[in-house]
Length: 212
Image 1 (cartoon, rainbow, N blue to C red):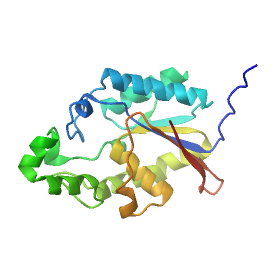
Image 2 (tube, helix red, strand yellow):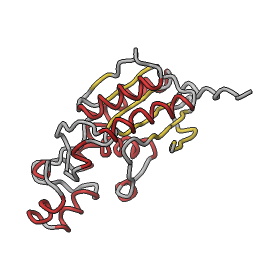
Image 3 (cartoon, rainbow, N blue to C red):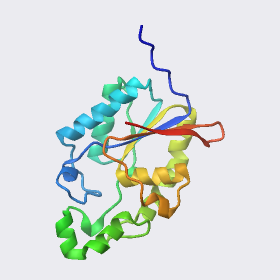
Image 4 (cartoon, one colour):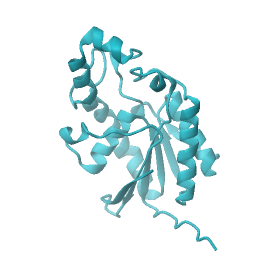
């Protein structure tokens, strides 16, 4: 007889990055461009939902950005999980970092226009800000207040899902794990990946893990 999965504790937060978008597949700086999921991205979203189902998750609340790739990922994941009736709250605070003038450019075109060293500085540094865009610090400044007002209280009431983007999730990871600007620069979050945080009654992290 196969044992059923042990239900996760009540106070937990699950972060999922959206599946691969068409802009990801094309190697473009995406930012606020509303790029749809590829077929691989749809499979990554469904796979995330199935993995969460295998872990015994059932969410009390969910949040997503306002961008189509995150909305579609949340829908596909929740459908696969068996929670098609749960409708995530959408908010622009969780949208991807705005890449400004880099948006829609491929790496080669961006390197030719701005220089490779400058591009990599904007991509990875905490304070680096592309023209007419946001730095990671700017992204943190809009994500963290939303987290404190909405996500954290929800997670303390019951299992909560957040589906968002590489940089908006890095902002959440930074505050959840207490990382500094230098530490967050090396954090990578792959499309379709899952991070789980379990909380004590005082909101401190009791455990954290990545589900492969």
